[in-house]
Amino acid sequence: MRARDSRRRNAIRLLQSAIKQVEIDSQTSLDDDGVLDILRKEAKKRRETIAELEGAGRTGDAANEQFELAVTEEFLPRQLTPAELRPIVQQAIREAGADSMKEMGSVMKLIMPQVQGVADGGTVSALVRDMLS
Image (tube, rainbow, N blue to C red):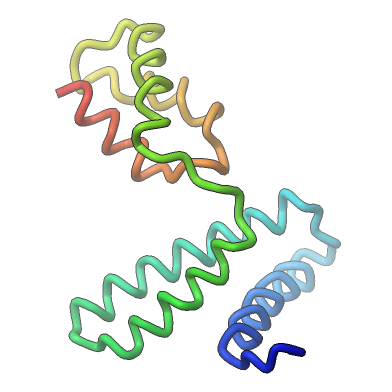
């Protein structure tokens, strides 16, 4: 507010509103993990909306959503890159003894608890598919 950045202020207010709405609906006060879950959901919504808007040719609206996504991601933990995920996936494949796509579920069960909150499930899934095929 002091920087007079109204776009950033509005994006933060949207996040606060989402958090407050969940607190009101559940009639509880959220802890840090609950807030992070909401922020992850909001980031996922933004990513999906950006893809839809770009597909419809609405680049101006997509740019606004991209900005809101960037603000949301500032409050989330840093995400692991595919290069950082690769050793984790390789270890899980070895532990599960997986050698085909049929065992993808068992590999994902081993990986997701390790990377919960620091890696997107879609990214992990794509990496597992790539390494098993």
